[in-house]
Length: 237
Image (cartoon, rainbow, N blue to C red; front, side):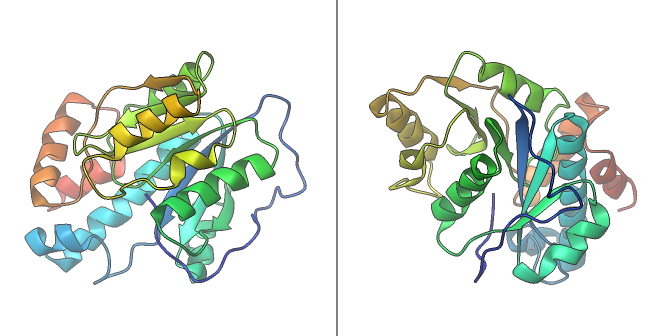
């Protein structure tokens, strides 16, 4: 989820003058514009730079499609800062916002903070590494927030692929050992310390190397409605 950029900006979209309705939900997609030679470097080590770029592009487009299919408003928190036109062309229906400078926690929290600044009452944040999520997963996350303050989608590597909140919670993004197998555990503990009710969604895996790409191919045979663009990339290999 998310990448560093040297600047931040207010949200932009054709609907900037529209305020969220009471109780409105927002889906935030942390996304980096896929660029040849720069996209998915761990995956590129196993399948080559061009193929990794093609899959990275498919992951972004499928994730944006998943967010739109949820029926909620969507904010793309993007990087690098000059990627705005790329995302505007592919998702003109979404709000756009440049990720702030800082480490992963600061960038993730920045997107959450922006969601609530815009006036939305709940947000769910997803990244680009799980294009295979079932279509109903985002709805499940918001349903979990009906009874909880925070919902988390555990990743098989010990992190999480989704976080949902009903209010800003800065403590969940500070002092977390990002990029380690302890991320989920520490975050759940932090929720307890902050007296936040937390719900856990089904576990999924991130796609970041050749091995997990193979797992993705198998998973898509079991989820025929998931990730249509990524599915087509597999067919055209």
